[in-house]
Length: 98
Image 1 (tube, helix red, strand yellow):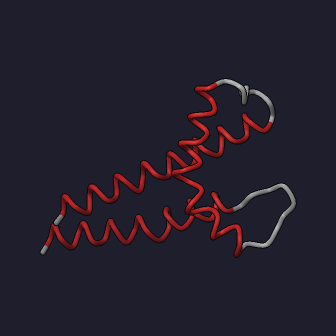
Image 2 (cartoon, rainbow, N blue to C red):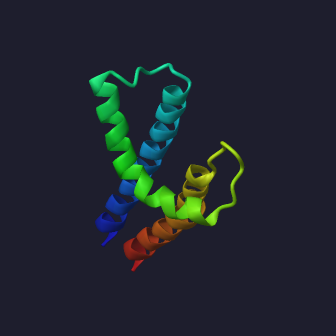
């Protein structure tokens, strides 16, 4: 059971990294640093969007609008860091001890 919790915690950490990469990518894309006509850039953007957007869209509907500032990735990262990870760490320790 310990290995399962460890695997889930690793998946959560990887998803956090994907969210951060998505935020940096979208910022570079919106400032024109990345060329939207480049096929590789477009494929990376579609992949990141398909992984991250299903989680962010419901939060955008709940959160109030702050103009062009999107706080939904921040909310997801905070929830993962301060709720999900400690829960999984506790479950890992309890499965290791008992």
